[in-house]
Length: 245
Ligand SMILES: Cc1cc2nc3c(=O)[nH]c(=O)nc-3n(C[C@H](O)[C@H](O)[C@H](O)COP(=O)(O)O)c2cc1C
Image (tube, rainbow, N blue to C red; front, top):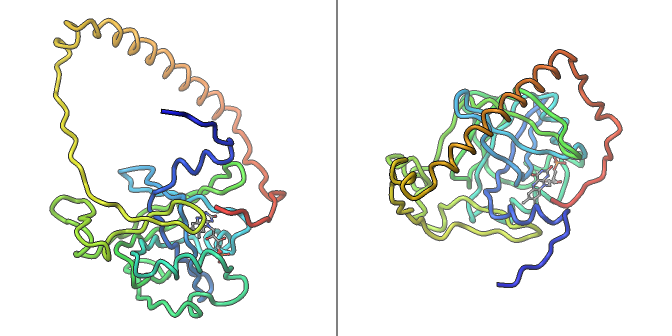
């Protein structure tokens, strides 16, 4: 195997292949939609999800002022719509109407949900944090639904039975993919006793002791930071450029 160096700024490409979502928002009766590749769950209970949004996006203001959003998981059927929504800004006009994508009412929020998608998560904005040149919007999940052709409700997983009903993943540039098939991991369960016999026990004990010390140090540092009441960073001077995702 030959390893080749990547530029630091291209490291994000190694995280490519994750689901793309079309984020819909509504503020003052106007809706907008833009694709987001940088999304993730951040808490199970309460259920929280996060999206990273550049301040130059019109949606950045929509999220800040409207305080709600929906994640729509597009299928291959609306691949070109997905790309187009990421190439024009809602600042120029109502791009949702221009896209002619049909939409329907959400259960708990005013932002619309898009047809041609296979899953939908409705959120209210719980928090936002400046992270380098993006803002991380954390959403509290208010409702979620999925297409029964796309999601196996018994297993609680995407079913991956039919390409037309798979969620679209984003590789970068104009490249997308869908998941091919699921594999099961087969792992032999080994007890701590077995591992000790194999000489791993001592090593694990040392790691655990070190972890306890580091956790304590991190907690003390957090408490000290809370006591200082660190001010929120000022984001008003962030560049308003429109970088490629
Ligand atoms: C597939 C795809 C994924 C994208 N992911 C993100 C993202 O995670 N965060 C972001 O700020 N912009 C992302 N963009 C760029 C925005 O979608 C794009 O700038 C869009 O035009 C913004 O629309 P708006 O100005 O109406 O909000 C992505 C674009 C594409 C095509």
